[in-house]
Length: 91
Image (cartoon, rainbow, N blue to C red; front, side, top):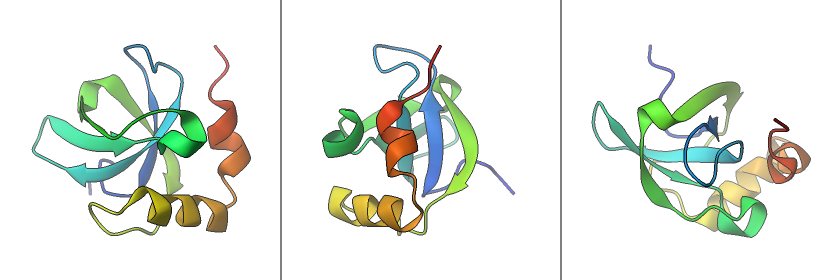
């Protein structure tokens, strides 16, 4: 079973969003996924990302593939991860 699935909470490890939390919304192929912050919470827009630029965490949200940002925000609130994702990772 792969750790890269829709709904997995990850930490971005490369780029200008490094150390910010994100959520995988869709798996495109073996090398790329679509991620979102969502922007209202972490400031990260929905975008395509190489899987080598993210680090999966143990948290998984119950969402469908290609879920909207509103659905993801509701899932984050349900899982009580709002404060963790808003703060980001301290390096």
